[in-house]
Length: 521
Figure 1 (tube, rainbow, N blue to C red):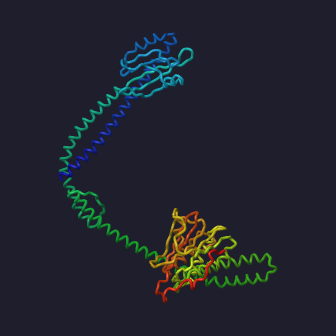
Figure 2 (cartoon, helix red, strand yellow):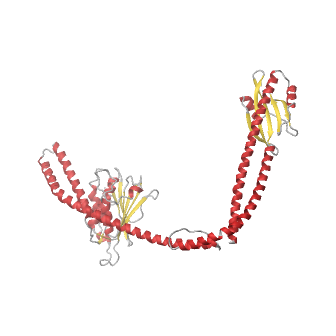
Figure 3 (cartoon, rainbow, N blue to C red):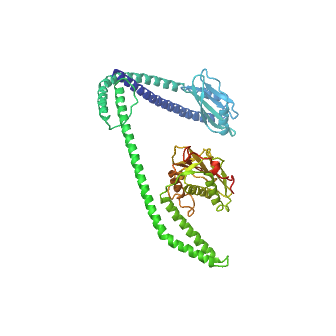
């Protein structure tokens, strides 16, 4: 306990010494500034009074000798270095200097005061002390401006400050010495017992009420207290981690249950909508087609209205199909299949739809791609959705690129990424890269949520990417979406490869994969 009290007392006294010394220094420094300001004010009043007297004597025709006599009659002022009178040409007419002081001479400050007819005050350094100057201009007979300079030393102010500082330090040390003796006796009596009581409380709290680590490594009571608190904190940390993991698992299960309920509700709604709307919608479409065939000639104005009806009925039917596709359970029939023919078929399927927009589809698929485990029908829907989004996002004249393997092409600066699904098996990566405006990280984090869409109203249902995620998860694969605002978006689909020995061994892809055009236009 002796070491602890000694440390505490020494640290406390050092802190008190530093704080009080700094306060005394600041206080004395302010007092010195106040004395300097008083000196400057007194100097200004003296200079103004003397300048008024000199001005009157000059107007009465007094000569330089008479002005010198006037200055000699001035009684000595404490700290006065010199008093000098300058004519309008800054020539010294009369001076009164202290013994040992340099001879007064005009400088730029005197010339500026005469030229501007403005009083000037400034500090200057002497041989071993600081001085303050005050230059007071006054009217000279004939319309000119002369000046009177009073220069005074601050040695007395500095001496007073040093004397006060020494006295303050002496009194401070004496007071702190008494406080050290008193604090040492007090802490040895009043700190040991509270610390032991706190140690006993720490052992009780260590059973699991409070948590706080104490980074103190000592071989005294504080070290024992730190060990108890750290042990308690470790137990609380483990308990909190277990509770947090349990809460996260419960939240995940609740979210999954809510998602299942939502999907079930959407499925029921989609089935009812399909049943209630499908039949009359087919009737409307059939009648519109019949009327369109009856209207002649080809440029009949009614055909345009019938075309609008047919397009809108097709749109409603597409929305119903998307809802049914999203809510319908997907059980893919996985089998070894080549990817290149599927991608070529999807590109040909969408090429005519976007030909008028001027967007190109470029396949960059090397020969000899390995087989993947997949359902051709489901994977065709995946790449139709992804390629449709890429074509819609691309401006006129842009190119949508489809490649396999390799690294992502988007730059890493400013790139946001979201991944769905996971796989630990060897995979084949299919890249779909567009040249659209890209998406910020906030928008990208919601792209796989149902009914979220960045397209204009009426251009998308917001179910395309959720369907893609569901199909890829059913294939035990992974889909990643990367985007850089202003550079475009890249979707990477990773599908499990056919391993050797599966279905009688891996076949040669070149035997089943047709030639793919590298530039579909």
